[in-house]
Structures are given as structure tokens and as C-alpha cells.
Image (cartoon, rainbow, N blue to C red; front, side, top):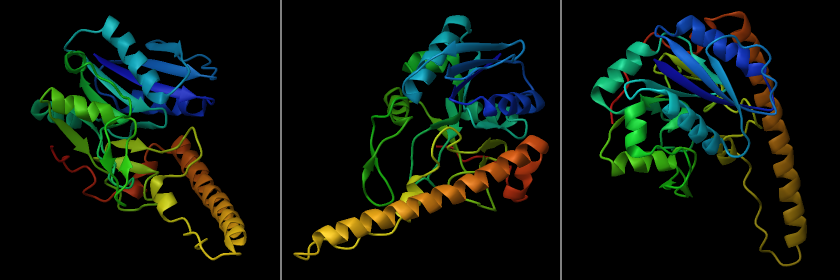
Length: 278
């Protein structure tokens, strides 16, 4: 049995789509565990359990995992999915193949300024493995990003737990041949789609790296003017960036509602190649 864990906040727009794609592409039986914050789920049908949570994303995923552990057998699988992520092909051959060689399989997003950790947009392991390492999605463990700055994010501590328990994992990488955005609208290993920022302002670390550099504020008498100019320029850039990404997001969301094959324009013929093992 597959136990799918997913969190949704403030909008139900992704619930129907995520469930539609799961039912279309999952080739093995599954139940769905939903963490909801300010979301009216409506009628979701059998095999869906809902829980009212609030607070950080990692905490919601940890609580869903606890609910699953209380119900599941060691040989069952936990599948974590971001609310705006879902399979676009049957993921089970990729999952089963990865778990034959390693203990966990998950998205990895080096395109997001060098992220190294397993990402909860898609992650699968056995219930036994999650129990063994006392799985935790919290940020904590740090790494240097593409600009040499120390970063952490959701999944940081999970990366360290895998190391501490001498467990291995299979990272699934982005297989887009067409990028509307360097981070959002990604297809991974040819089987998982992650829209990105479906529940928040769509501004990635890559976007921030492209933001205009501030003018120096060290000239006496001009510091106030320079700071004011920098602030206005940064605000204009952020508004323009957010507007452009929001327009793309709405365009792709409309496509995925209408066409299960919407993702094919993003991937090359080699998009379903086997993932690398780490």
C-alpha cells in the first residue's frame, strides 16, 4: 500500500487536480492523507483522510507521517507530495527501481541556487525506513548555495538523518528541455510534475539572484538618495517579476486542467531516463 501525504493551504484549487492525476497514473493501491489549513476540502471521495494543521510546512509533513506510521505496516511506502505536485506518468517503475538500490527516492533541485537536500515535492521511502531514521522534514543542516552563502531549507535535516543512519537515496533531477522558468514548472525523471510556489508568492532564489544590484551607498551626502533609489528599483523589479511568473503559472494551470499531456511540451524524448543514484 502507498500512503500519500500532501499539505494544502488557503486554497483548494490544487486538490482536485492532484487527486485526478494520482488516480490516472498510480498503478498500485494508495490512500491520501491531506494536511489542510484554511481549506474547505468539499467531497473528496473514499481513501482520503483530512487533518486540520497550521504552522510550518515541515511540521505538517511530520504530523502526516506520524498519522501514517500509526496505521501502516513496515513494508508500506510513504509518498510525500507537495500540494502542487503530482505524477504525469506511472511513477512506480521509477520508485521501485530506485528503492531496490537505495533507501529513499526524492526530488533534488540544484537548479534552485544549488539545493542539495531531498525535496518534499516528491519523496518516497518505506515506513520501516522512516521509522528507523526518525524522519524529519525540518530545515537545519546547512550547505553553501551557488553564491557561496550558507543555506538551509525543508529537507535539510532529512539529508543529515540519512547520513547518520548510513542510508542512501536516489535524487530525481529536472528533465525539462523547455524551461518557462528555471525553477518552477519542472518535470522530474519524466514522471513527476512540480508546479512550484502554488501556495505562495512565486519568487525563487534564482529570481533573487537576477534582481538588480544596489548602487553603492558609501558616498557622503548621497547615501539617503541611493538607498531610496535602490528600494524603489527593487520594488519595481519584484512587482514585475511576480506579475510575469503569475501569468505563466495561470497559463500552465489552465493547460493541466484541460490536458493530461500538458507536460510533454516541457520534456525531451529522453525525459524518462533513469535517475542517477547517490
